[in-house]
Amino acid sequence: MRTTHTQRLERWLGAAEVDRLSQSMLGWYGPPVAVAGVPGNVWAHAGGDFTGPIRAGQFCHMWDYAESRLKRWTRRQQSTAHTGFSSLSDLISEATSGKRYTYQFQKVGATGVAAVTNSLWGVGNLPAAGANAAAAPGGTIPTDATTGAFAFTNPTSPDTQHFTVGYAIATLANTLLLYDRLFAVNKTMASAATEAVSGVPTRYQNQTGGTGDYIGGNFLFVVVGGTALAATAHNWTVCLYTDQAGNSSTLPSLVGNSAAIVRRLDHPASQWFAPLAADDVGIKALTQMQCSASVATGVINFVMGHPIAWMPCPLVNTLCVVDGINTAFDLVRIFDDAALAFLEVCKPAVTATTYTGMFEAVSG
Image 1 (cartoon, rainbow, N blue to C red):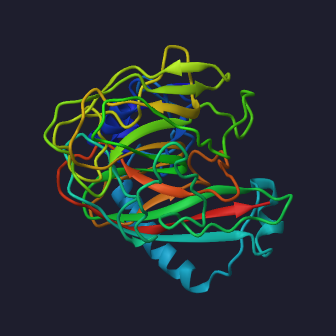
Image 2: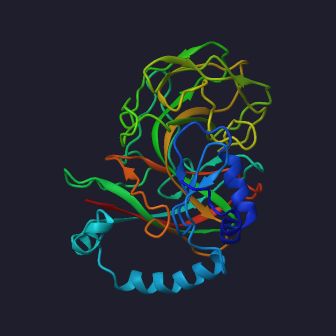
């Protein structure tokens, strides 16, 4: 697939947004992630490159497009039935079959750190704020029934459900990552001993590449829960996991942050995923955690997720259309019982940001 026209992409999203997306993909080990909201078929790749045709940015930017779509979207929400489609070829036949599902959100984010990612799992208001995970070794395997996740509607078998479109308004320009929250476990902080983890996710466990539920792309992040960490220098080291081939691997040491504030990822700047061992492309299960120092106070959760789509919000207080039909339309599957959640990736400023909007999925 050819390289995306950089000038058009920057004209559409803005140079700062493109740079933030590019920087966030440095070191990424999984498959490309769709950049929803860009007309064409644009994907963000490991190393920060973009591929695929872009059918925008020649003469106008996202602001002009958003203004026109806002007017059309408002009229459509007042008059369109709860219908959908399972694929482009089925669009007409599925349009009246009741297979479109709408998920609304309103997330009031927390104060952050510039160039650092925040988790929106533990904040409200819609969905409600999620709780910290259960302690090791079992941890928590979130589903759509878990507080903090969207109330997901499973399609009737044999149908499957797919992400198609989203609309978001942000009080500060930023980028959201919609992901499926696969597993989480609470780490004992006042200890430098190894801590075993036995819980195993139930989604994205297929070891065969190219399948919809392939392990490739499963990522890990370390996030501060509702209590900030004590002012103690520390690293996350000798953390073990099972890779996409079923082998035991060791995470490269991850530098933590003394006195890390709540909701932020306890990672270095510009890094929203923990690095994996060379040649690994995903995590099947986390099997061991360890901190290099005993941190007297604070809450840390290790979380596994799988990316669904990037949702850029480059325009402040303006409806940003994440159009999955005229953009990177790959009908990315959302598996039954998915625990859908958001990360705000590499915040451009420390200011707490509120996100309001919705996204839709179709089944068939």
